[in-house]
Image 1 (cartoon, rainbow, N blue to C red):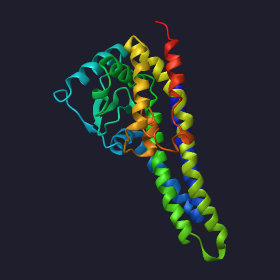
Image 2 (cartoon, rainbow, N blue to C red):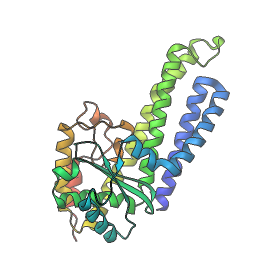
Image 3 (cartoon, helix red, strand yellow):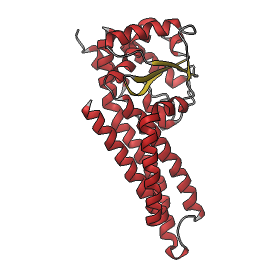
Image 4 (cartoon, rainbow, N blue to C red):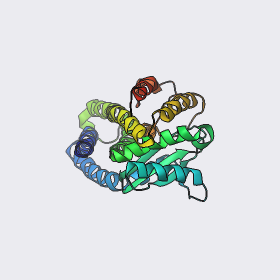
Length: 282
C-alpha cells in the first residue's frame, strides 16, 4: 500500500513537471506559473474525482441489482472472499467483452463491465475477470491507474492545444523568433508521448499482480486464463470506442485491434499472463 501511495505522488509530481515545462516552452516564466496552477488543480481533481472521470471517459452507466442480479451475485461473493467492501457496479456500452476497476480506495471503488462481457463469457470466466478487478482494488493500485488515465488525458488535450498554438504562432513575443515556436511544437508532440510511456510503466507490473490476486480470490486461475484468451480475440475483432488515455484501465487493451496498438501496448502479453496463471498452485 505504501509503495502505491508513493507511486501516486511520484506520478502527480512527474505530470506537474511536464505541465510546467509545457508552460515554459509556450509562454516563458508566466506560462510556467500558469501551468503550475493548472497542475495543482488537476492533481486535486484527479485524487478525489478520478473515479468519476474514468466512468465519464468510458461512457459507463450505473446498473442496479434488479437489472443485473447475476453480476451482483458474483461480485458480492468475490468481494467477501477478498475481504473488501462491495464496489459500485457500472456497465460500459460496448459489445467487446472487457472490464476495469476504478476508485480512490476499497471503500470508494467501482467496477465497470462491458455489455458484451456477460454475453460472451461463461460464469467461471466472468468470475475470473471480476476477481482480477477486485484484485486491483484489494492491492490498492486502482487510484494509480485512474489518476494516470485522467492526467494523461489532460496532458494529451493540452498538448493538442499547444501544438496548434505553436503552428499558428501563438504564445511567444515576436522578438523570440521561430525558436519559441519550434520549442512549443516539440513540447506539444513529446509530452503526450511521455504521458503514454508513464501509463505503460505503471500498467504492466500491476496487471501481473492483479492476475495473481484475482486467482486467489476466485480460488482458481482457470477461469481468468480462459477469459483472457477470449478477451484478446474479441478485442481484435470487436472495436470499442474508448479514449486511448483510459485504455490501460481495462483488463485487456480494448484498442489491441488498432494498427499502432503494439507500439504503445499498456498491457503485458496475454500468453505470458496465462503462463504465469498456470504456474499458480493453491
